[in-house]
Figure 1: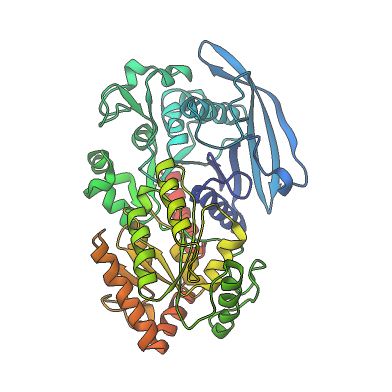
Figure 2: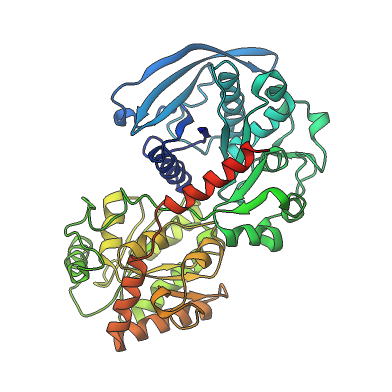
Length: 489
């Protein structure tokens, strides 16, 4: 099967978050299964092109309709591990993708709307269109709309579109003029059953457009799919999901076991696995040495997270104070885009700088992330909402017991040591429900009690998590079922 992925990011070329890991991990697994995979990305000036042995021009001049004219693009190509990559490079004085970063520009909507039209124009003039066009998040939400309104009639009618939603906190709410820019009619599309935003009269919602016009829509965990239909997590789109329930579902993400595997990880001092778990202690010592923590008979808690409201920053801050009062150690790795949150954690870093039990690193460091997973005992994830989450799966792979709030993918992957209905060998962490200090403290207290009083049971929780299959194998098989279903329509 020929599957084209369209995304604003893909690791390790251009990654800003979990979306980049998703596109890389799923694409690589599908390619291993013998499928033909092509990934479309903007040609960012910050792209890591060192991963390509050869990057070449596929189409030196692609004409893309834009406002009342056409813009010229160059399409470049490369290949990594059996996956083909296609880069859209517009030749315009606007320098859409030469901004020094992936996101965060005032004209993001215009940039990605143009990218969406350019991808379809390229496919329209290619020798063979893909069987499946798999779009990601709001940045590509206009692709199903463009296909339905324009490109289906021009020769792409056999193509089927899958649309994956990674975070409903970002829906692409824009002025309707963006539609006219790429050749769409705002008067035709700005209606409640099409692109009109339900929360902001007069605005277009690009994610809503993708949901309405795609052949299949999914979130990145079954629990999150239920939440966006039935709770405030739908962020205004609950009724839309209920209307389109016949083509909507949830598929849990995987993690890339070529990158996240303590038995082969080159970024940690000592490799280990479920059968060699005592070797994890050497990584704990290395983590303490690197971070300047005292060597002591105390559990080490980790936090690896973006610092924003979604991730429960108030609960993260409370956890730090609580655990230090309970004579524990803690290492935090995370950064904040919000200046108020950044200032708050900079003050907290300064306030804890003299402690031998606490270190806060407020900028991302890939090698430190690996060492935290390898060295810590428990990981705290108190998210207010979590479409899937990868940190809890990575943590369990590294013998770390996660302490999470029961939302989204966290609820699908973490099964409480005390209260789960699963057998003990399937339990792997601690879960709390209420996003309150009391709720978090209850889970932390139970986890600490097991670590201190019943070390063998705590060890078994570690092993249970390590032996769980979080690879891309099962998610890829589920996506193949979806693709086959779409092709049969």
